Length: 149
Image (tube, rainbow, N blue to C red):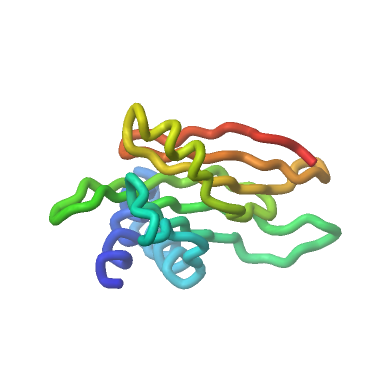
């Protein structure tokens, strides 16, 4: 737990804009630590190529006429081992952003080239539900839009 909190502190510090004041950075960090929610973690029984945790952070506000405050994901990625390489990614804010499921078929396909993990998310766009596959490795995040319903 201590490692997760330390990672989040470093994450917010690294994401802060250069012109942000320390007060703004502390407010952003406080908001993240108080409002983020762990929505998915790679299952240990499968032993995926990387350990991935997906955190959700939704802006304050209420839904009004089908429009809800935007959500973004903070994705923590780690290798395994005693001193693993670790990184993180932050997605764009999307309305009603939801973690759907892990995509082990794509994970296997992409991991042939380099270790990666894929998962599917959904969000609302112009009244339609959009499904997007996100693939992360230690260096990059890739997006592929699957379908709109």
